[in-house]
Length: 270
View 1 (cartoon, rainbow, N blue to C red):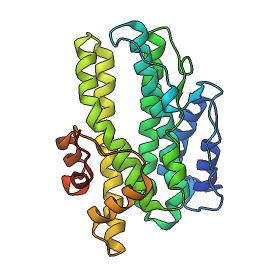
View 2: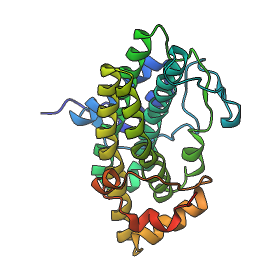
View 3: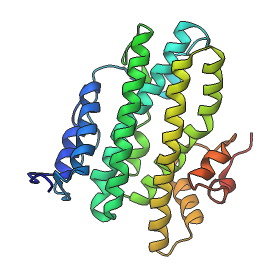
């Protein structure tokens, strides 16, 4: 038998989103995912999600154009900057996955909450691995400035689940599939076996995450009578400010169910 449900899922997610310290947010996200899986949370969406989740006082957030250069990739400074930027991406990804469920779960099938809470737990685990990696190099999350724009796509799509699915998993996370293999090659070339193992784990998990987003997007577009690729293209044109640029990791995207039928027509050749 499941435990008594004294708290709603929305209340638990809101509490996790409003948890600021990074390590505490990791624990909170994992706890929400575990409690949901074990039936301890009622499938009730009775509180609103915050417009912006809480975060630690550091890192300092800077506009993309004001971010300092990472330095040479092989130097200690350059390597720390790389792992710090990845840790920040994963920290924001915890909030993105939690907010996805808390904000849109009431209008979606139960599997939507199951899937995206599992994503939140994965992102929390990724952040913990990256935080440990930084510590092994004498650094920590917050030691460097970080990109301020990562939450903006979530904020801009806060009223539309289809737009959120189109932009966050199917554009931003899919971009991670494209850039991680080259990063993995560089880290292996540096002889960093532990770093390569972390990146491979993240890449494998992100294929699943993009697949989850794509599956729910396609299902909803189909339910609403839309052609999924055309619907995606329209939403991305409207809600995403950047460009869809090659090179693409077509095999990883295909494994996630994101075929060229979606992104090929929007690709900007450079």
